[in-house]
Length: 427
Figure 1 (cartoon, rainbow, N blue to C red):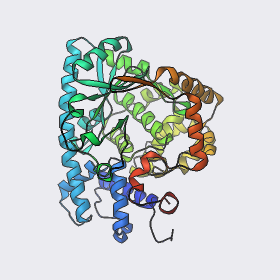
Figure 2: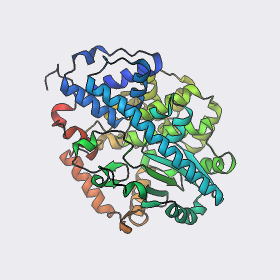
Figure 3: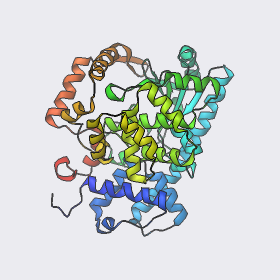
């Protein structure tokens, strides 16, 4: 690719810093690089905005400023529509959350909402500015059987289940005669479709959300493995909500899990920035959690990326975490960028870098054990029929082939449908 033609990475990096500057410093002016973008670059920009959940927030900011010259007219309308649609969607989800909480509490089931929908209500300038695809709830594991019965009574259909939790979808959304409902094949957070219109839609009140019920917070694999069972259980039983310190630790761990799998999002780092800026946090309490669970390396990467983007410096926390993180990981983390650790990247993480992330043999043995256990413990449900996960050997061979052939990831389809090619247009 000629040097003067921006690649996907160039466009994404420009967008990330543009929106970060607008949110933190009120700088709405378009960066100089965007002044030279043509239709191709603005189409890439729209795809990046969708992938990273930036549309509703940008639409909200535009609604406050009413400057129609910052973007091409079609993209301006799209961003405004994203904010409006997400506001409708979040209102529906909030109403549904309250209905579920009421039903659970009437049955004396201990329940605690967390993640996106709580962050939107307590930290964002406007509820509709924070996108989300699901409602996350933590429930005590001993109440699992009763929860599954109640969920079906409330009109939900279980899609996937394992030891850690279940994912459900509302049946009234699935059966609704909306014009797009029948085209969607849901697999967790992904939509499998060849429909460019659907992929480029972004946030829509016509698309269903999922209900993710967590019975265990012992999650992740290899170096991103963490165990917050005790933290969540105590919060659920006593206060019904995570403390600011607990919420920060979880959001950092959650971001690292996604960054490690090349599915990080700008909105996840903005969540961390808002927690740091708008809540009073005791570093001693944060250190008490991280030291006990040995979580320092997992927390350091998103903290570095948040500082680079938003300029919010928490030097005491970062230095403490860095001191407990191996040197080779500190060097790696300082070289990485959000874009290459996101769905904008067409490729899986190279084998050499995967090994570089692994800083002790326990992570490899843990990954192997959990992968083998998943054969028996993870179940997908479709139309009421249980389907076991593919055997570990087949999953391993499939992943190895992707590494060797440099197969593009399914999430990159939003770019492929615009006739963009990894080798030519990525960087």
